[in-house]
Image 1 (cartoon, one colour):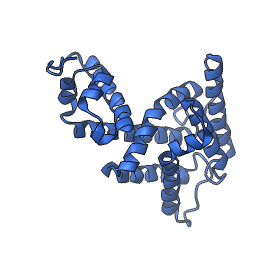
Image 2 (spheres, helix red, strand yellow):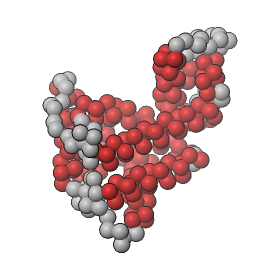
Image 3 (cartoon, rainbow, N blue to C red):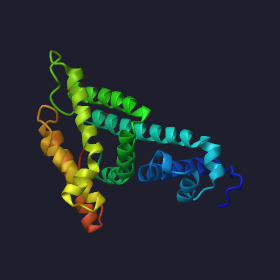
Image 4 (cartoon, rainbow, N blue to C red):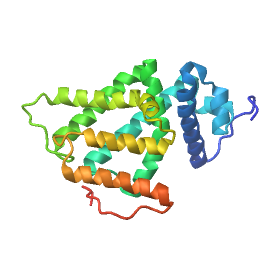
Length: 235
C-alpha cells in the first residue's frame, strides 16, 4: 500500500478486524526486530494495511506498543481467570487454539522482559495477583494455609513462571527443538511434572495432561480431539 494512502474507515466489525490484525503483526515485528528496530511501515506491510490506518488507530509506534502490552496482559488475565473459575484447563478444542496463539505472545514477553519494559512490573504484579488467587482459592489444588506467607509464595511462583518465559529460547536451543508447537508441548509437560502437589491437585493435573495429549494427537492425526467432560463453575 502507498504510504500516502488515506485510511479507509469501514464498518465497526471490519475496523476491529483491521485493528486486531495490526496488533498481531506488531507483536511479531516487535519480537523479531526489537522495539526500536520495528517500523510502522514494516508492521503495516505484515498486517496488509496502510501506515495511515495504524496512525488512525494508535497514533504513534509507542501507542501501538501500549496496545500490544494491553493485548498480552488481557490474554494472560483471561487465561488465568478461566483456569481459576473452571478449576481446569480449557477444553481440548479451545486448548489447541490457545497454544497456537501463545507463540507470538511468548516472543513478545521475552522481548519486553529483556528490554525492561515499564509494563513488565505491572505484568508481574497482576500475574502475582492471579497466582495468589489460584493458590488460595482451592480451585486447582489444596488452598495455601493462611498462616503461610502466601503473598511471597505467589510472587515467587510468578517469578519462576516468568523465568521460563525469559529463558524460553535458551530452553529451545538446549532441547534442539525446531517445531514450535512441539516445543510448547514439551515445556508444558515439563512444567506440569515439576509442579508441586501442594499447588495443583491430581485431578487438575490429570486434566492438564489430557489436554496436552489431546492437542498432540490432533496435530498428529489432523482430527479433532476427543470430547471430554470438564468441570465448570458456570455449569
